[in-house]
Amino acid sequence: MSKYLIPAAVAATLAAVSPVQAQQAVAPAKVAVVDLDRITRECNACKTAAAALQQQVAAYESRAQQLQSNLGPEAQYLDGALKALGGKEPDAALKTRIETFQRNQQSAAQELQGQQQTIQRNQAYVREQLLTKLQGLYVPTMTKRGATVLVEVGTTLAYDPQFDVTNDLLAAVNASLTSLQAVAPAQPAQGQAPAAPAAPRPATQTPPGR
Image (tube, rainbow, N blue to C red; front, side):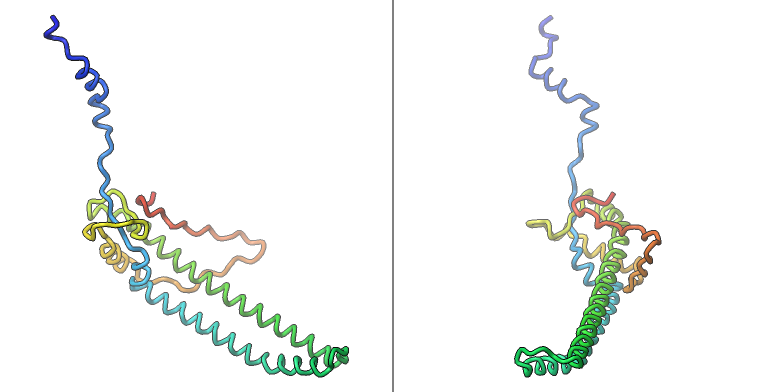
């Protein structure tokens, strides 16, 4: 009867790898890489939005220069007047002039800060729109190239260029994204419900589920 017995080592191997377990084995991953920075720079809608944002920055810088030109002469005058007093208390007229200048200076700072915050919100809104569009294009691009995992090129140490799907994703973006709004929606007034939060940037090591 011993000739019908399965050797112990073989029997242990068969027991360890059952047909069910073999079916459940994870297939090897096929990794593709993408350069999101390049897409952000080169997509058609991105270029148009970047130009609009640059105009906003230029307008901010122009306004800052204008305010500086308006306040500069008065600042110089007041500085000279205070130095001329040699530490003495300024009279009422000079005090009033100083207080007026300080209010104007504070108002200018608040104006510029508001413009800067607006530009930052607009920049974030452009990014949000692009990332939302990309979320819907990752998986189709991967499927087209037979990939099961997508990583951002900046997270890799080295890769084979044949697995770079940046051109594919860039073409998909240009075909489906005609424009990006460079002005964010107005923030809700106090007491109103806030808008829905922006979609987070998707993880770049696996297809989305920024």
